[in-house]
Length: 310
Ligand SMILES: Cc1cc2nc3c(=O)[nH]c(=O)nc-3n(C[C@H](O)[C@H](O)[C@H](O)COP(=O)(O)OP(=O)(O)OC[C@H]3O[C@@H](n4cnc5c(N)ncnc54)[C@H](O)[C@@H]3O)c2cc1C
Image (tube, rainbow, N blue to C red; front, top):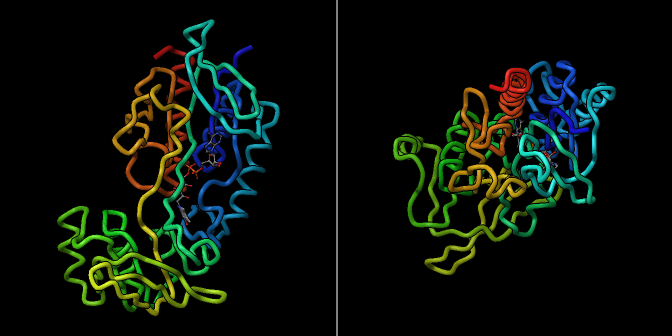
């Protein structure tokens, strides 16, 4: 028997969709490679509504416990979905296939596979991840009050990180690979007026140093060839993210950076019967609460579709 709904993912978006699907008594399969999503690495999440502060690991446990509480309504596979296609036997259905070689069919698919942050790939980055190396400025800027920090990346994400840090950090070095800033011109002009921001151009980060916490970052000046060191307690890496949209590549419409295009009112994709929510989409802002809310919107709209065909 086909499912009504297959939900793909294990982060806040997928779990939110799963809980609402269970409460609607839809026959649901949730396939998650892991639970918790990207913020699992965060020691201290301050903006998950209902929790003054929560670690990423505890949030992941709570999400998993919540969805597993609906075992009569939601089947859960710990697996990775490799592809979503139209069913060969019934064009009203979709087929998913997994890494473990399993497959399932459903009338509706909700893709909540999130994204992965781009990393610099330099020495010290992995070891000091969560110990001064930061990938989410909205989340962690307030932890760097009175400290000197570096922001790596000169596009919109880097500019926004400077805006997030400005009220807190003592000094912000904006480290840019190129010779100019990129991103929104109005935001560029704004941050150029911030007295605590220093721009470092033509610089390639080489190493992040520190024992138990970040204490400095080494970079190479590509004009002079010199290696220089910045004494900083935080390195905000804002060089973009990669949407986990490969499973629907060529099947639903994506934008120029492979995010799934959705109608922001309903979270519908370009294919009738397929919805998407959270960081895998072209929605504005990447936050746990937004991913969860958008997934609820998707699920409710999908539920209406299941019953009315619209
Ligand atoms: C370091 C860091 C800290 C952050 N801190 C905060 C914070 O403090 N507050 C906040 O609001 N936001 C924070 N964010 C942003 C927040 O984590 C994301 O906006 C949110 O996790 C997006 O949720 P999501 O469910 O869309 O996707 P994700 O969290 O990316 O979850 C995707 C899930 O799907 C699974 N998956 C992926 N592909 C497949 C597949 N093919 N098959 C099956 N499963 C799959 C993954 O294993 C994962 O569990 C942070 C992000 C980072 C990187």
